[in-house]
Image 1 (cartoon, rainbow, N blue to C red):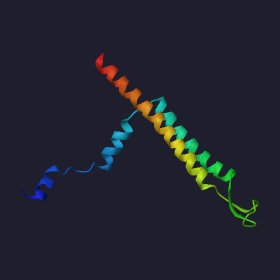
Image 2: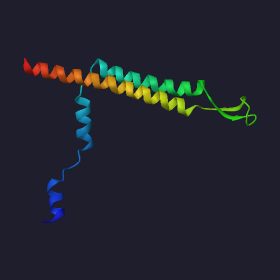
Image 3: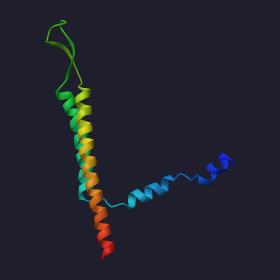
Image 4: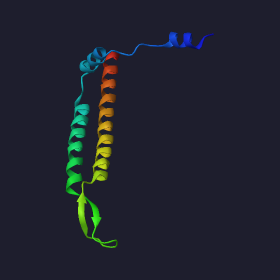
Length: 110
């Protein structure tokens, strides 16, 4: 029993890019999935804007001072907003996908 023969038997070809684009382009998005894309793009822009509106303190005037000398772009706030927005958009997309599957099942049962 040769291990390489077993691997060769079970090996599958990777899908071609043209097949992937045909599959993705033939997929119809419903309202919830379109809303998920819109939420993601709005939250992406909002994260950048809020990171600039609420800057982080780069350095203070003294060790115990609370006066900021320089302010920097708030990357942490931006990443938190992006993460929350991504989770929200994934939830909306999943709801839309579940609804699409259920309507497909309903059509096949009729």
